[in-house]
Length: 535
Image (cartoon, rainbow, N blue to C red):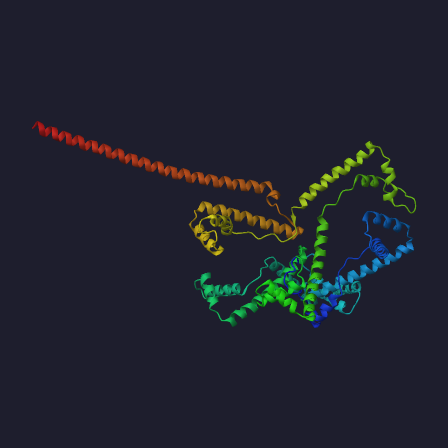
């Protein structure tokens, strides 16, 4: 769900449709999904409020203030600290409840999938959790009861969930190829399918486009509705796919942007200025509905971001310790006086060390820092989003050719459609060697996509620099292919040169033959003339 795309709030499950949209929005409106603050942070925030109330015009100096807070916190008794700990526990419980409500109303339609496609048992458990959530039952008790009931169930009773699992598995296969459809694309596909079924010649795309233009508005509207239904289903699949892989979510739209998107779909907007004017004319109640929609999108984004952050933390390299940190590690397990913290207690001992003794810890810290930096440089090459799809040979050719065509005379202000036609004509007239070059690039791009997609589905991420990660075998194969191409080109050249030499030889032979024949004719004619003279 890296992509909280449309102005619509995320899809709700069939059971949630019992509640009205407004009721669900009211439930979600109270939720903020703010992470719980620990006891020490809560104490510091309280001290900040006290300082602001006493000194309204003074600014807080963070260094001095944080030191004062740390000193005050250490002096507090366990009973006083317990008050802040209790607040933290309350916030923690509330945060978990809020997560459950967000997951229930926004993501339960996707079988509560986070890490992998659900098993038959998981589908059964999700169903029971949904029922329990509505009755405010304890999730732990539901899970225990569900596991016991599942063991006792016969295969016939389990069959319903096994079939659902198979359906979900096909969903995940489909989810890899998510693309939005338009009414025109559906019309094109249907006309092609109709031609194939009747065993007729498949019509050209230009002809199909012309027939689309001549269609009635009511027919076009039908195709539009059908496209919307398909896109809704595909969006649902996309949410599943994004949740499983923990893809990076896009920031959600605000209330005004949601309003603009809705009006743009209705084709009621011609400019941004017009949109602003319409927004200003709305009443507070009308604006409220858009604010609620944007709030649900924000909650969905926060939930997705939480999953995404967890995924990154798993593979992110750990920061190395400082020189003093490695000194502390050696002192681990040694007793410290009551009321003292090891971090502050051992500091004077470390400061009293000689330069030679400190050097040992400093060198270790420097080595670890270097290793960490290398790992971080590798990590920069990591991508958590879906890899880009491969391009075909013609598209790669067009990408290279259009900028050159744009530089030519009379093409500086030419539309892209015209340039595309010119490039397409050139592509058809191109020789096989240059086409082969782009076909090879397309093959390499396809290999890159397959490798990255495989990594993304197994690891949850892939590396941008595909060529750097390739094995020696793959590189050798590529080198062999290049050598083969070079040899074929050489053979062609040699063959053409041989043909040329044969032609020149044949021409020279024919010329020499013609010269000898002329000489013979001349000699014969000379002999004849001499005999005649003698006579």
